[in-house]
Image (cartoon, rainbow over all chains, first blue to last red; front, side, top):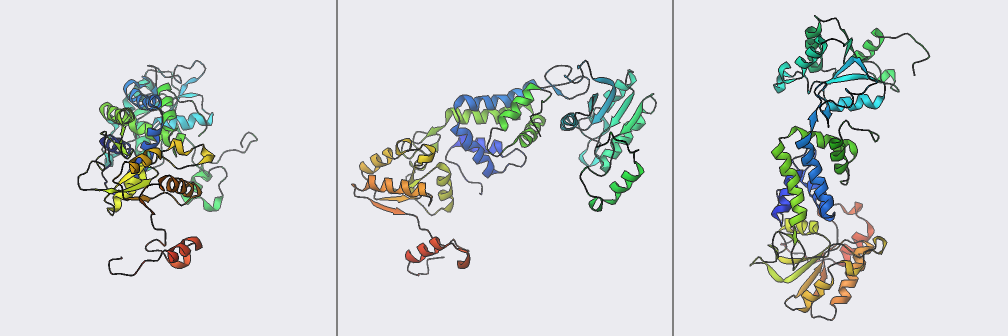
Length: 207
Length: 207
C-alpha cells in the first residue's frame, strides 16, 4: 500500500500515529484504526486516555528505578523481600522476566540500558552512580549482575565491577549454560565450554 | 507470558487496552507500551488524541457512507467523477483498494457489511435501503456489485439485485477470473471455468 490519501484527515492522522509504533506498518495501522472505529466512543476514549495517563503520571521508583505508581515501588517496599541482595538488570522487562520465575526474593536495580558507545550511551546515562550510592549506604551484601552476554553487557559488567570493588560486597553474575530441555549437540561451543567450567555439584534439589 | 502483575497499575491498564486490539497479545502490547513510554509526553498525547478525536469527530458521507471529514465525502462531491455509475462495496477498505487501482471514476456505496445470518446481520443492518433510494432518485445508470464471492456475498448480491430490479438500471458485477501473473495449472476449477465463460474479445488495449 503506497502513501495513499485517505478519504478523511482524521483517519489519515490516526493511521500515521499508529504506524509510528515499532513493527506496525500502514496496513496494520489501518486495520487497528478501523477496529477502533467500530468500538463505542467511551471504549476508544478509555484506550486513548490509558496511554496518555500512563506517560503523564508514570513514576520511576526512587530506589530501584523500576516503573511504579508510587515513589517507592512495591518490590522495594515489600516487607518480606531480602534487601541484602540486589539484582542489576538492563530494563524493566528484565525485572518482569525474573519476577515470573518466582526464584528471586531480593531487590532490583534497573540501569535503564547498557553502556554502548555505538549508540552514544555512556555510564553517566545509566543508573550506575545511584547503584554505587546504594551499595555505599550499606546493607547490600550481594550484587547479582544479570545483563546480556553481549560486548556491551560485558563492558557494563566490568565497569560496575570496578566501581563496586572498593566496597565490601559480593558480586556475582547469573549462570550461563545449556538451557533446560536443550540437547548438547546443538549448543554453541562457548556456552557448552562455560557450562563445563561452571559445573555444579549434583544434588536432588536440581530439576 | 501468563497474567502477570505489573509493578504499576497504569502500565497494567495501558497493556490491557492495547491487547484488546486484534492480533495484539500481551507481549506485543507490553512492547508497544514501553516504546510509547520512551517518547516525549507531547508525542504520546498526540497519539492518544488522534485516536480519541477520530472516533469522536468522524463523519460518514451522507451519500455513499464512506468515512469522511465532511457531510458529503470528497469522492461524492468531486466535480469530474462519473455520478451515473455506483460501485457497491462491503466496507471502506474496499473503497481504498479500488481507488488505488485508479481504474474507476464513478462513485461508491458502502454497505457496512454483508448479509450474514450466522453473525446476525440482516439487510436492515446494512445501507441497502439507502442504495435503493439513491437509485430511485434517478441519475444512476449502472450499479456495479463488488462484493466477495462467498455465500454471504452472493446472498447480498442477489438481495440487492431483486431490490433494484424494478428500476431502469444496469446491474453488473466485477469480473472473476485468473489473476494477472497466475498460471492456469494452479487456478481452482470454479475460477477457471468462470474465466472461460466470461471470456472477452482480444484487443491490444488489454494488458
